[in-house]
Image 1 (cartoon, rainbow, N blue to C red):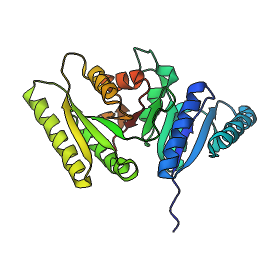
Image 2 (image 1 turned 90 degrees about the vertical axis):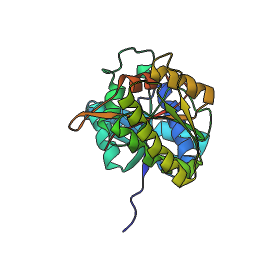
Image 3 (image 1 turned 60 degrees about the vertical axis):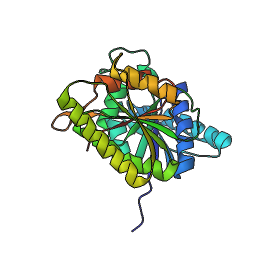
Length: 264
């Protein structure tokens, strides 16, 4: 049986930040060797011809400029549900999407970008600016006390295999003994996984002078991180939600891409 080809999905609304997302995808594709698929969602079928023409133009421009010709799809319907549906049907490895719509927002829970992230099974990488580095060499992993935190560890293998990354594990500065125990357990799990992979890593504790998410971003900037990996959580049953800390990181990461992973 032939192995189903994985793809890097890039939702686009043809705005500038969507072009940045494609640039990021091209760089990732060059490392992992996966196809890129552009996706545009329209509200009705009569909009399809125009969307297909625009997608073809974007694909041809990418080929002329980068030597990469993405595939492309037009979906009809609701943006959130269609991105989730297409990402599942295409055997998507990651979704890379521009997040211009959340820059500067204080209340992010109603923004459609976050709804898209939590509705899809594939990990999302949200970006706000063009890529600076070609590779994900320095990756920040905030380590908290949630049970879902351990599910990020599987992606350590991905980055080790393709990027030989250095991992920066960042702990919150907390005083509650029960929470400290949970953080330490998650940290021990991450360290064991990294040791098994022979990966390079460093453990940090934030000062505790600002909100945790803000201090994570400050440290990521100081480290000159190429990526921050965060985890959403299950609120009740299969409902996926995004903690305010994760919302803050996505909305304020600037030039640093943020990978959001939904729990299984």
